[in-house]
Image 1 (tube, one colour):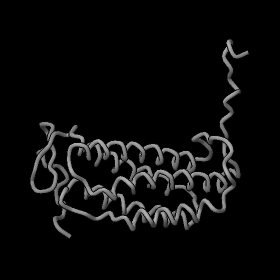
Image 2 (cartoon, rainbow, N blue to C red; image 1 turned 135 degrees about the vertical axis):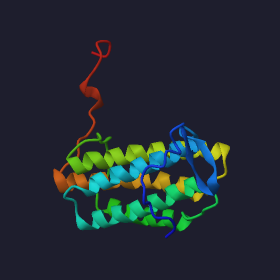
Image 3 (cartoon, rainbow, N blue to C red; image 1 turned 135 degrees about the horizontal axis):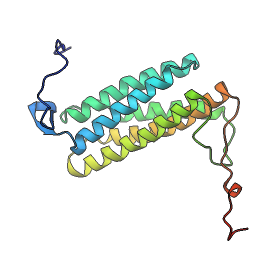
Amino acid sequence: MGHRLSKIYTRTGDKGTTGIGGGTRVDKDDIRIEAVGTVDELNSVVGTVMAYDIPEDIYLLLLEIQHDLFDLGSELVMPDRKIITAERTTWLEETLDRYNEALPWLKEFILPSGGKATAHCHLARTVCRRAERRTFTLSKRDEINQPVLAYLNRLSDLFFVIARVLARHENGAEVLWHPARFKTEQES
């Protein structure tokens, strides 16, 4: 491991810039920092899901995903790094298929609610989608490792399936959307 932080603040970012790989400084609202920050936010939301009483296999899965997200974030902040591979996306797909196989088929949309872990897993899904959008925007300006986009895309799908699993663990059921429940006066 490289440098150890002996002092948390450096004062180098006080004027709105931050350092990335290779000693380059960029504005704190640069799209690269937006992407990295959103991946960091996602990792924190995943940690929140893990703080609840969830099945051990889900906990261990989320822990592995946290490590991947840290690798992914470091790859975005150090553009020459290539860590996330197509094999990691394949692993997500296989994991997603395994968990989804035991779930009933969907006939309706699911509301992002339920128990606390379920709701936070849905939050992880939406933050993951934002991380994917920010990373895609970055890819239009700078070259990035392409497996990163596929990984984030599949990861949001996995969070959806994990939320479905957690809904059963916490409450036994999902909250389904009922679109006809609130009709407008014209429709009545």
